Amino acid sequence: MSDSKPIITTGGIVLDVDHYKKYADGPLLLKCFEVIDEAIDAVEEGAKIESHDDTYFGLIAAYWALTALFERHTGANAKEVSDKRIDKLRAQLLGGAQQSMSMPASKPLEKPVILSEEYLDEVDDYTLASLALTDCDNSQVSLLAADHSLSPGDFRRTIVPMANAQTALRLLCRRLLNDGDSASHLPAGETLQ
Image (cartoon, rainbow, N blue to C red; front, side):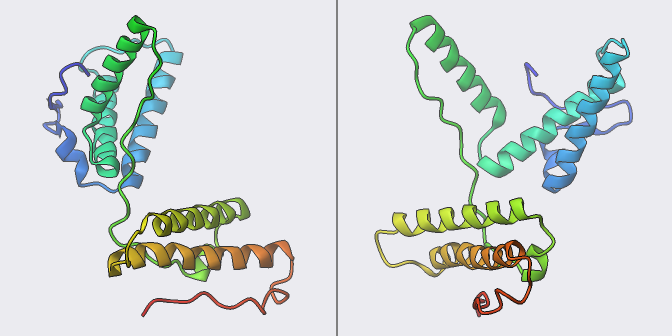
């Protein structure tokens, strides 16, 4: 959207970033999916998207939902980041030079939680292996970045992913051995008290 101003629907609902900040990630992502799916269906059926029709308002709702998600996960304003990125791309095209485009990284979790073996047992092997690898990588980065003794918060952000990775890898080993008891000699994951 060119001006990023709030819109009031015919039903009196104000569509802006603040409206969507109150929703969790899952409902926001589902809303965006549904809106885009409906817009695609409408276009495929030959409909034309008109200003202030249901599809138009749906796309604006998806815009604000994505703006809220972007801000929640990066701490940055999506419109500003997008505008800067486009300006840099234009400058690169005009100047002929290639520059790296940095995007805001996701903010770390406030307080990571240890996932139970029962929870992890519900996910498929690929997700389990990916989780274990990601948590190991994140823990390694945290440890390598620490040039001093770890604070309690840093310690928790380091040890919790390691505990999750251990549990995930233990379950994955049991699955791959196709025998729930054959890996029983593997120690149980530790919990923080």
